[in-house]
Amino acid sequence: MTTLKEFFNRHDDDVAKGIPHKNNLIKRNIIAFMALNGESTLAELSKQLHISIPTITKLVGELVGEDVVTDNGKVETPGGRRPNIFGLANSAIYFVGVDISRDRIHMVITDLKNHIIKSETEYDFELADNGKSLERICMAIERFIAGSGIETGKILGMGVCIAGRVNPITGRSYKYFTATEQPLREIIEQRTGIRVLLENDTRAWCYAEYFSGNIHNEKNMIYLHLGRGVAIGVIMDGKLYYGKSGFAGEFGHTPFFDNEIICACGKKGCLETEVSGIALERKIVSMIEKGVNTILREKHSRGEPIHIDDIIESAKNDDTLSIELIEQAGEKIGKSVAFLINIFNPELVIVGGNLSRAGDYVMLPMKAATNKYSLNLVYKDTKFRLSQMEENAGALGAAMLIRNNIIGL
Image (cartoon, helix red, strand yellow):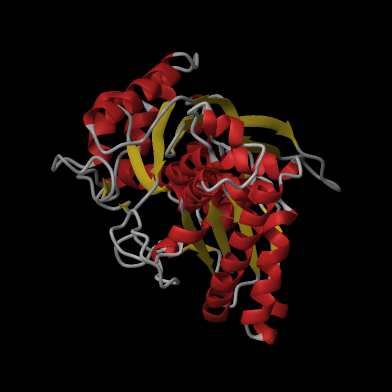
């Protein structure tokens, strides 16, 4: 093996055969086992991976020499010889996570243990389906990596998540950067020289919530993302649910309402047209123009755009209009969540995104409506809570997904 990149980016169907190929596969299994279970002795690795002690000893020794695994010294035992314990090195391998949202770019670098080493957010950004927006994204990623102080050769992969319909297998976004036949994944790979996994943003958030949030023994979970759009991520039996082409989770485009509002998807009456951040922004501007009083009136009169975060902050400052709009949205969301839990019967529903920061203003009417419209036994099965993750959770989830993809988890 010459470099870590070559080792981890070599696929199982490569032409390599024989003992070297077999040893590389065992090394991947050793790394994957340590990633899931932590430090291990040679005897534990031999037993769990069903590999002989001499082979395990040889290959772990090679991984130590390659700075992927560290020898952490002797472990205490009740008697007899004390074996050495081995664990993954933090400084040998890194992954990049990028969350491209509608108005900002979150970026993180993580180590092999999913610890965030560096985090940065680029504001003053507007996601659009054009070359200018794509160039801004690529430049932001390049600047972030160049300024991280980490050797590019140690960065084995990059997870990039973006709003809208995404097929992780083809690496194509079907909402943004569709003017070219070249998938978005390939464009970013060519610009950065780093292997890329393209993912839907809500699924990345869901993955971060499930594996890094306050999850206990739940195996079936729905993550409801209430941002400027509305979407869900679904965990079934501990695994992300994708659907046939990776499009599962576009809950915001369910036709819940009999209105004439055209959604971003081109259809009328979608859930997003009434309860998304964009819908609330539109509603409060309309109410201001009709003369309804609010502390955001001055901001609007200056010609400044009103963001969902402004509405939430106003609600927390006792602005009646903002509170009413959020509570109305919460009730409508609750009715739609009743539909979800009746179908999936999850153990847990986590609410994240911008609107989740409204706390009880959105959660209380949401839970009341869910209780009202769902089956009683199903509602009793389900716990609800707000996300406790930072705003870079999508980027973290994307980094975790490319890490697991590369090391074979």
